[in-house]
Image: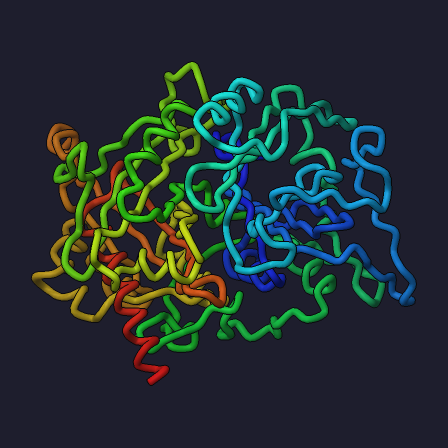
Amino acid sequence: MSCSVLHHVEVCVKDEAILELLTHGFGFSHCARRVTQHASQWVLKSGGCVFVVTKRRDGEEVNENGSRKEIIDVCRNDREWKKDGEKSHMNGIMMDEHWTIFCCRDSDSHAVDSVFNVALVVRNVDSVTERVRAMGGHVLRDPCDLTDSQGKVRYAIVTSCCGNIVHTLIDKSHYKGNFLPGFKTVDHAHKNRDGSTTSTVNGYHEHALDNEHSQHNGNNSDELGGQHKTENEVNASQIPKHEVEVSPTSPPLCTHVDHVTYVCRAGESRQLLDWYEQCFGMKRFFANGEETEADGFVLGGNIGLRLKAMEYWRCAETGLLSASGASMEDASLKLVIAEPLPDVSTSHVETFLRAHRGPGVQHIGLHTPTMAATVALMAGRGVVFRKPPPVYYEEGVKLNEIEEAGHGSELSMFRDLGILLDTEADIFSEMEEQEGKKRYLMQVFTGPIFKQDTFFLEVIQRCGARGFGAGNITALAKSIILYNEQQQKLKA
């Protein structure tokens, strides 16, 4: 499916609201489905970005006439696992079902919506599993093989050393299928009531019919996925109609996952970096000229944040595997560690730790090659984006950078959509001088995706920029602090 070392990310949710957000709002295609006794799962795809949405279920599904529908999990093997009707549950994983695992591993019921599974393509499932075990990680599923008509997949599931995050380790070198054994490919030809068929490019019609409680009513100004809007966020009904075009034959809105950001507790980032280097061969990635080996990139004051980044080292012979044919960007896996500074309780990472009930995945950056057009389309479909204060686009702040990057004529659109631009010099600035090109990136952040103030998404376009600029990171932290302050005012 994706040629990245990142096979997919998995989201565990209480309800299906995020399906509407990703398919209708972000243009993801619903490409595969799986229903078992314990879980309902949807596979959504945009370019190389693959999300698996998992929801607990009670093991009973009804047909249209009200009779019980038999659930058949093609991954289940009664000779290998326990007999029918007997539920085996250990550390949040259903031992009688392949692939099934939940974010709240210590509970029999769903506690908090969470992005919890960062599934990785590895060279050797067994050796990586043993390295994780040796480094103190728990093996939730020992290495095993699954086969279907498309071939064989070997996989295991292990815990990380960061909160509720787990990693499904996958070797698909002998598999030609679209996704994974046990997942049924979704047919995007929807049959209407009058007998005609409608092509469902993003699979949204299938979801709307499958979920009778869908909140979508065709009004593009509605908020999607339970997002909550404040006065300083993009409201689709207030956005002027800019001239942007995205046709049905256009490339995916989002081409690949740019980075995944974890939040850890104060003092834990060094341990995280060491763990991922030992288990997966990842290496430290210095994203800013101001950061140091020991301290990382520190933003003091009420931001109270320390950032360190790591990426998959392509030359490493251990750990992860990028498939041949992967682009430079898609083949790379960047993990960013956000750590609160001691004694700063107002930072947005501390807010995440409280709302999420511990460390975990805070946000995922999705890359787009057409920033303005993509954000305009998403906002028009109801996606709620955070907006910086108006002064951000004035002279002395970011106006000069926007003009020097060649986007002066789009200033009004940037302001309306909340697009941030950063050309702050980083450790790659010497390349900029040698090549005579301005390196910059553009980005925008959504509001919270879930009811809790935890996970959000970022849309980013890199125009030569390879790191994470200081101004960029500051804008992110400040925008979240501003959002939290506005929420408190609304509650007062």
